Length: 400
Ligand SMILES: Nc1ncnc2c1ncn2[C@@H]1O[C@H](COP(=O)(O)OP(=O)(O)OP(=O)(O)O)[C@@H](O)[C@H]1O
Ligand SMILES: [Mg+2]
Image (cartoon, rainbow, N blue to C red; front, side):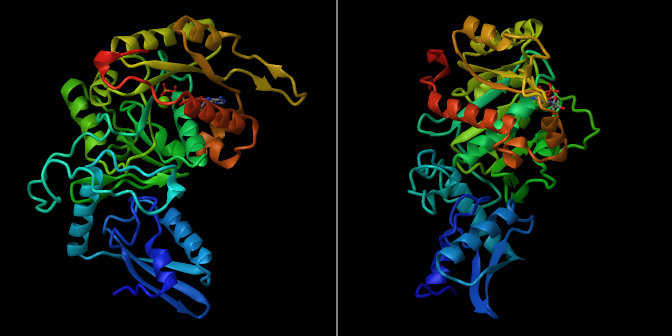
């Protein structure tokens, strides 16, 4: 149906789908590219459950069309047939089954990245009745994904705010970034990211929605806001396993986990599923908060996950006079970092706009990256990247 002699069409075929993580040509999504009345009309087929990142896809198509010298584009999304969807499902399963086929660099690296390394346990995903279990993409030694677990001993210190803004700041540096909101009791990441649609479902795969360049899966997508989640032990374990294994994550450079406050079942499950996770502890400057956060760090040690650093939140407030006021005390982050023998990776100022931005679903790292808080998150992201992956590949070999 498509014409390889048409450079504009070739350019569009090569567009890397920011929600499905392969080129739209290889995914079999491109229906047509036509130039009519001064516009490039691009028709793309999407799963019936919807495309996980329609705006981002339109932007990528627009970029590719412009780079190929085409007229401004209009993207039309049409529903796939069932047969096409079954093929897409097989393709996505195949993409998820080999840990080592990663792209160099970030999202901008372009459309390649399926070297066919490892087709997983048996086959090409045909036969939706009895799908083979997918290997855990995050437990594999060959996985290039850095899993960063954001933890604290105490609620309300800003874990979710840090999770979301660190993720956005990493994405702005060109990394491919995902969030797993593992705070199953107090999920808040979807609303902080402004995500208002559930994951798309293709066969037995969940496709995370994307916002501000970050994909996200959260318990919040599966229960009502006012529905108390009372899951414990085995059920919780199972839910977290599904969130990790039944999701088309697309081999991100970073998977950032928002853990529930304190210690418990979730952390235990995470340690089991993602033995290579690195823990960052969020604290506030008061000493009391520091003591509680230290408990989380001790737990991380018990779980044999390395604590890689400390983040101090609400460190100061800059007044109109330009002076910094330390509203919540001083030195908590520094003290904790010292006692753990790790670096204080960042200090985030208290900024009323941070709360408003969180409530409005537009993270400050996205809407005001040059502001005081935006710069603090950018520098935190830089420190996290510079830290490099931990040297721990098996939980039994914890180096710390
Ligand atoms: N640096 C900051 N400046 C201003 N407000 C902040 C800052 N950090 C966090 N907040 C606000 O404080 C509240 C708690 O933050 P957040 O939800 O990120 O904490 P948490 O540790 O995830 O909480 P929980 O334990 O309930 O999950 C939110 O309303 C958030 O917008
Ligand atoms: Mg939270």
